[in-house]
Every structure is written in C-alpha cells, then in structure tokens.
Image (tube, rainbow, N blue to C red; front, side, top):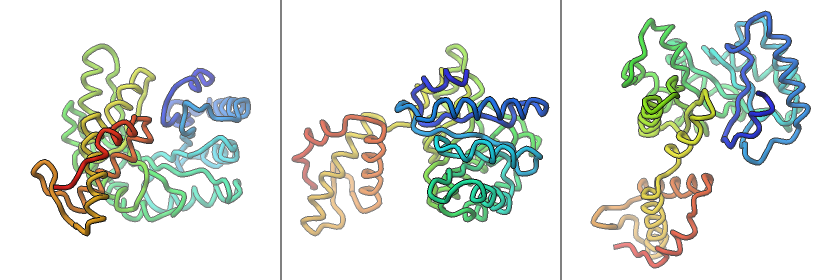
Length: 293
C-alpha cells in the first residue's frame, strides 16, 4: 500500500502514524514508513507534497515519530493532530529544529479538532511563523468533543469551519483544508462528496481531505477553478492592466463595476488555474483585445 500510494496523482499524500495505527503497532508502523521513505528518496512528479501525520503532543509517541521521519529530505510537511494550543505547536517546532537543519525544516500543518482549538485559533495561527503552513478541520473528533452528530448538510460545523477559514486567511497560511467526506461508494457517495466540495469551496477552503483514492479526481476538479471562472478572470486581468495604464481605478465590464478587490480575486483565480495546469494561455490569446468599458 505504501508503494502504491506513490502512483497517485495528488497535491498531497499524508501517511498516518496516529489514528490508523494501534498503540502496540506504533514502533513497527514508524519503522515501515521510514524504510518506505528511504527506499523512495525522490518524490514522484505526480505528487506535489509528501506529509506524515504524527501522534499528538499529548501522546508518548510524538518524539520518536519526529526523530524518525522529520529528518528525511522527502518529507515536506508534518501534520500535527489534536492541536489545542499554541504551546503545543511551539513544542513541535522546537523538536523539529533539534532534529532537522534549519535549511530544510518541514512545514507544519495543524489539525483543528476541538472546541478549545477553535477558541484559540488566533494564537495557534500566530505560533511557529514560517513553519505553520495550514490548518485542517477534523470534523469527527470535533463532533465527539462537542457531543454533536454529523448531518448531511454539515450545519452543525458552520461556526467552526468559518472560524478556521477566517483565521487561516488572516494569518496568511497557504492551506486551509476542509473536513473529510466519509461517503465514497456508489452514486450516493459521489453525490455527497460533490456537494461537500462545492460547499467547502464556497466557504473559502482551498482543499479537502480524501480517505480513498477514488475521491481524489472529484476533489481536484471541484476545487480547481471552473472553465467559466477562469475565462471571467482572464478577461478581468487583461482589461485591468489596460485600465491601470489609462489611470482608471474603477471601470466596468459587462455592465458590472470592477475595482481593486474584484481585480485581485481575478488574478488569484488565474494564478490558481495555472497551478492546476489549466490552459490559461489560450484564453489570454482569445481575450487579448479585451478593453475596460
């Protein structure tokens, strides 16, 4: 399974040493993962990032996890579960700097799984500057902590999800990843996944956790800008350059006012489309004569 994972096309592959491994199997799982990563020192071009989900700070396994895998040059990120406070991230960053040269420290991605973490998001996001790269919402543990039941419309998570996105954006973190969709089999599972992806994207998340390879294509497709979005953004960016050259701070396109925030959003969409290997150049050629109104 470990070797098979490297054949996927994915933005991120995270190997789990936490919940999927029983306490008695922790040492053997850690050793197997280390051997796998040593045997494949070069990350395949179809995978943008390799990460390891270690055990939480509150466990007796964290130090051994970090000592074993964080030193490997092909580990791009450490996913830290059950982050409840900034002090826990501080501890992780201190352990990392003890084991890994500063020139190749892995990024840290924090899992937000509790009411306490949501209440302390500002402090958590301010900790480990330069290392903390993103937040992930872990809905199942959050539901357990609050004694609530997950429903199909996810309304019980609205506050937490909004808070996580807002805090991550305010802190300038590059990744804010939505809850996992536990349904993945059959047409009903696909429909649920698509609905959750659209909802998460609309809230500001820029990615979603996958628990099965069959979910990856759907998540990538729905979180990438649509063809209509990219065409709109290309038109805006081309016209905005011409408007700026003419000294116009605000202008109109198709009867709608375009100002700096709208132009900024359009540029962000174009940048994301390029990272998603969407053919932006042909659209730029098509709309090269676009003028502001």
